[in-house]
Length: 165
Image 1 (cartoon, rainbow, N blue to C red):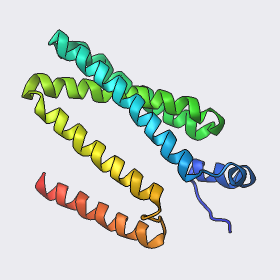
Image 2: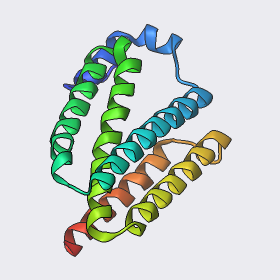
Image 3: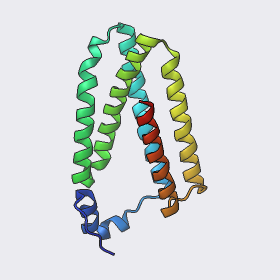
């Protein structure tokens, strides 16, 4: 079945349909790569945050605060348009996101104390690990119903945040 789209990623997937079917993602591969990239991001983030906290100055982190997301976005675009380079650029993306989040964590720790960052990391990590377990065990199957429910929840959350803001 062919769909018309202007999305360059989807167009590339349609052109390379035979390649995509021979290198299909597996549950084990997705779980392993996601966990590996998360660990890389956490290690770089904790290292960056600890350097910033030890220095006690937020000024040193502004270069990473601006540069890391830009480099991460470039890595995403390169991986989208050159899929054979995606394994390398996913590593670059994880490192840059770790550095960016480490700077933010360092700033929040300097401004508000230790517990706000550790609580956020534990909550986010717990949700990630729980969803990874549910996905890997097959309890959650992604289908059209699941997508509709998640999309509805996302729209509701965005509207609630808009009204709260």
